[in-house]
Structures are given as C-alpha cells and as structure tokens.
Length: 541
Ligand code: F6P
Image (spheres, rainbow, N blue to C red):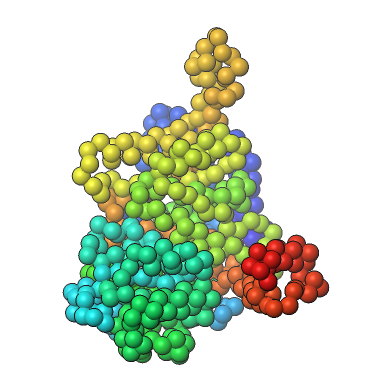
C-alpha cells in the first residue's frame, strides 16, 4: 500500500479540508468554554524539555489522526529496529547506532568498543587540558583546530559554541571546514605552532576539503619550524579509515576510531566529538551523552501522543504534506545556539531530502522541508516580516532558555518577552477591523498594509538552562524527529547519495581548470565551459 492510499492518510486529507481555514484565534477562544485549555492539552515534556505545540493548526482529532499515521507507517517498528542494531540503512547495508554511543546499557550493541574508545578520548583530553600533553617545545596546548566538514564539523562546532560557558577558557577551539583557503588562513593568523593541536576529523578520510586543509595546516607547521618527527605532538585523527589516517602521517596511537554504523551527521557522540571533550572536559561530555540518552528513553517509552520526537515529526509532515509548506524555521532565542540551524540543515535535509522510497519507487508526496534560521531577536529584524505578512506558510520552532547565561540585568526578560510575543503575534495576527482602528479615519489606505493574517503555527521548546544535558536532549529530539519523518515518508534517512555527483564532476572541472591545454568544449555544457574559461583567463592559463 502506498502512503497516500493508507486510510490514516486519506482520513487526514478529509480532516484537512475541514479545518484548513479555521483560525487559531477561534481554537484558542474555545478555551473559554471550560475544560482543559489548549496549552494544557498540547504541552508535553520529555527528557527535561518543555514542548508547547498548542499554537499549531490542530485539534484533538488532528492529533489522533496524525498518531494513527505514525502507527500505520510503522514508526515504532523502525525506531525499535534502529535501537536494536538492525540494518536500517539498506543502501549501504549498515546499522545505525548513534544511540548506542550514549547508552549506559552494558548489553547495548558494541558497548565494549564504545566504552574503550571513550576512555581513550578521556585520557587524551585530560592530558591536553591539564598541560601534560605539550607541543614540540614543551608548551601546553592553547589552540585546538578541528578540521572536518559536514558531520565532522557542524555538530562539534555547534556544541562547542553552545557550551562555551563550560569550556576551559585557556584553550580556544577553532573549526575549519571550507576548502576556501580563506577559512584556514583566518585561523592560521590567530594560532601559534608551539601551542596548537590539530584534530583531523573525517569518517572516510577521503574528503577533499578536509584533506586539503589538513595538508595545508601540516605545511604551515613545518614552515614554522616544526620538524617532521615532532608533528605527532600536534596532530590527532578521528576516522573509521585508520589506514588512510596512517598514510597521512598520523601515528596510530593518535587515532580515535569511529565506526561505519555511525552516520556522519549523527556522529558528534563518537570520537568526532573529541574537540567537544577537549573544550569542556570528559565529565561535561558524559552529561551531553546522558541528556541524549534521556531523550532516547523518552522516544522509546512515551506513548506516541505524548512523545516529543513523534509529535514534532508529525507536525512537520502535517504542514509539508497537507498544507504544502516548503520550509521550517528554527529560531533559537539564544546566541549560544547560533549554529543549531546550520547543524539541523544537514541533519534533516541530508537525511530526508530524498525522492526514492526504500523499495525504489519514487515518492508522490513532498519529503524534507528546507530548514533555515538565525537566533532571535536578530531574525525579527531581518526575515520575520515575511513570516508575519508574506503569503507563504512557514512553521517555526522557537527555542528558549528559562535561565540567562550571563549576569547582565534586563536582557533575558526582554529576550524571552520577544520570543513569546512573536509566537503570540504570529498566531493572533491583526484583523481588518483592528487595523482600521489603528489607521484611523485619516489613513484608510494604510489598512491592508497593517493587517496580519495570523494563524502562523509555531512550537515553543523550553530548556531550563543551556547545560550539556539539556543540549544533548535537544539534539537527540531532532535526530529522532528525522527518524519519525523518514519512516512516514518511507525513505532511507541514513544514506546521502545525492552529494556524490557534484563530487565526481568537481574532480573533472578541477582538472580542466588547472590543465595546460584549453578545455575541450565537447566535455561540458556551454555555460560550464565559459565559466572555466573565465577562471583560466584570470589565472593566466
Ligand atoms: O558529502 C557529504 C558527507 O559525506 C557527509 O555526509 C559527511 O558528514 C561529510 O561529507 C564529511 O564526510 P567525512 O567525515 O567522511 O569527511
């Protein structure tokens, strides 16, 4: 049976027709009739996170139909298969076990290997942080440079930034990902070869950007007087391809393992998180894992109606597939969560941005939404105009911390007030009559410009404070949301074949860019040929 012919789907389609024009104002007005309010009915919590989804265009019937859809599409079976270590990534014939990385269950798959690698990481991190591990002149490490891209960069970068309050202030962490040399150059200008440790992170250790940056950094060390034999004091590697890391010149003792059952975008819990551990220490790293494990338990045990990742995934499907919304805004009202949206872009779009179903059939429904976002309140002064008054429906995740991360007075109340007020304003809007009153009799032409349609849906996720546990739970929430949606859409959330073609053509174009002879016009389309010719001419080739 195809997704769209499931009774659960057709029931949702019929229900959508009934409620599509109903305004959230009307729904909230029904609270006055007594009984449990929307806020009471549609606020849940799990793993320490509060999750208010009352400002969504749903009622009790919607929720129960959505949960029926989750059941009918086998979300629970897919979840259980993932936790059990079954092959849930069939195109690569792999299990998907990032959850085992944070499990305290000694019987969890690969528990021994995981613990051994974590212990090795902790010993190393303690040595670096205590100053026992020194650079080639005997000075303690003061700069960590994480070189990696995609999942080998976005997760650790997001977490190190988010947990800056827990980091050792003596050690500064930098992230270099882009093959654009400007990225590495900016960092080289700030570091010192005597006190720098490079962490080269690549699951495959074949990624062009990472190897280019790693080689340039190694050259920088040698140009700055570090002898070949001393490089071991300044380089460690994280990979599942130990042979390639050794070939690069990193001593086997300085290699931290990850495994093929850890997907790149799900890997920050593994040795890929080494720069997190170096920054905040093994204890805080453990707390990050513990927070994620709490969310894992919630996901496995909470009834679907009160299960955060399930509800979050279902709401995304509701807007994407029934309302036709194309994007999902993530608005963390926290500067520390600055990199959360870009981390989630890879997590969600690389995972579920697919058209092939597991059996190879092409989907006839939209899959992953475009994920985007910026911290509030900055976003309010940039793109919120469109969300309030544009013709496009964009659901929002507001994420707020109940405790300030700083001692400055006034800021936090204002920050929270902005967050809550935006969700209220987006939900309420401003009616024509209200706009008329504001415009007054002298300016009737203003009225259409100051009307707000409202009915713009949002979730508000509340963290008591931004600590490692809460962050771990928040990240795991989104990871499991991806699994829920992938199960409903029947796609493989754990492969990423779509990035391959560009990589292959990139090599061909690079060869043409640097070749002695001009490019054969038969090799590329006219646009690409002209672009290459332009770049060659500028470079004097
Ligand atoms: O190109 C996409 C990708 O394969 C991501 O899935 C991955 O996170 C990233 O590249 C980096 O890969 P690696 O860790 O193997 O360098």
